[in-house]
Image (cartoon, rainbow, N blue to C red; front, top):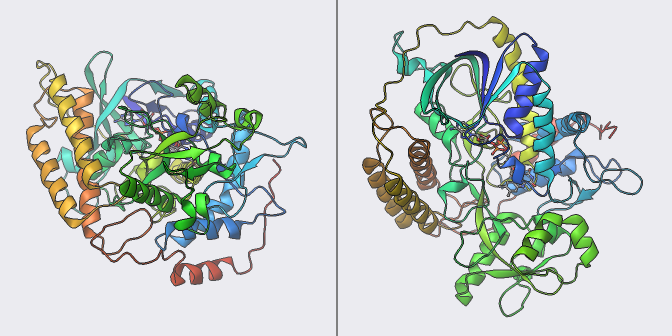
Length: 547
Ligand SMILES: Cc1cc2nc3c(=O)[nH]c(=O)nc-3n(C[C@H](O)[C@H](O)[C@H](O)COP(=O)(O)OP(=O)(O)OC[C@H]3O[C@@H](n4cnc5c(N)ncnc54)[C@H](O)[C@@H]3O)c2cc1C
């Protein structure tokens, strides 16, 4: 199969990129693949919203930049933080033009919520189902764009690259991407898709852990594929745990209780009813996620409990239902009335701040391979993502990648004579063995590389994962099955996280090795501040949004 542009992923990043490219080049073919249904994404699950400076009276780009750098704990790329923040309003306007409906105040202004780490109300949202609203809006637009083909239940196996084809003498310097081998899960056929440009927008890695808020699709496939193709991967050790996933006994916690609930007055309490966050940070319940997640872990360590509570009893019922309808419904379904009973919560793997390293245009270190969204590392999040900055990042970088790739799509030839992927098809997948291996992987990662870690734990986990890797069939010459492919990718991703963690000599943001000096959070580094001052010179508060 041939397509001008291959997009791997149907979340906010992939669909935004596909839409813009297809509309700018109506004669080009754009193919979006996803391994489940179109809307099985982390995007669909986003509750809180998108952080954008739209309040021209109280807010400013400088404040948003400051909050992002502060959360990132000295590891953000200041230039990236600046342009992402400043380009946010224009990208949000596009979403509104596509038809996304966000909550508004009585005077028709966008209603802004507050989340941890933000110095003021800045988060544009649609109730507590912002992601669903965005996902549906983008899918509706994609359906109306004739030159986009969406292939569901189609899992990418590996990228097709120069290094693998050996068609030319590969210099070992810069690899080149020509598309991807994919498995059509409906027919069990392998298809090679030749593309001039390939965009990896395959989402996060949460499924590598036992407890996660992420969708089942978040198995790190894009990062693992890019790594196998020799792309630079960065900062994988910085996995953010969301402090408040709903705790349900004997279940891997996964339903998110949005940070916006704490922004609206929810208070964390331990089993003795004590509001403990004041003992950990002056911002109390609205400290950044890393601090809150570690505070909860510390409370649980002291009490031996398996969860703490989020007390929302002081939030009027009508307000709770209005602002958090999805959370209210979920609580009711499991017999919790938030007005009368505290909600049991536990930290859960939520967001990978690292990923495939890109430049400011979303280009990776492999020629003709782009990455954006959660599988990328752009420099925005540093050591800790500020709440609601990831949807923003996906919008800004998909736009920049689109702008950058248009010329290439027009001029680039297809790669000819791509060989078939040799795989035997006659073996049945060993479903039970795969399931056991996945459980073992998740337990190893959670026990040894969670909210805190140590060198001993990291070494132990690396050995266990390598052992699992030797026992797991690689794709070549083995029966091919989506779950086996995912397992391989999860092992590769787990190893990338562990090895990156071993390399770190300092605790920052979401990373905490108990063998390293604890120290206080660095917050904004002197370097960040200096860069910020020089970039911001002559830049006034230029918010011209017309939303
Ligand atoms: C519960 C929850 C709440 C969140 N709330 C917020 C919030 O309020 N604000 C915010 O900014 N961020 C939030 N986030 C984070 C944010 O939702 C994600 O970072 C973002 O949506 C990721 O978008 P994406 O397009 O990169 O990936 P996704 O939306 O996850 O899409 C990934 C796509 O890749 C496809 N895919 C994966 N592997 C393969 C493969 N091998 N072959 C083919 N296709 C593949 C999947 O099928 C899917 O279509 C939240 C995340 C979660 C889990």
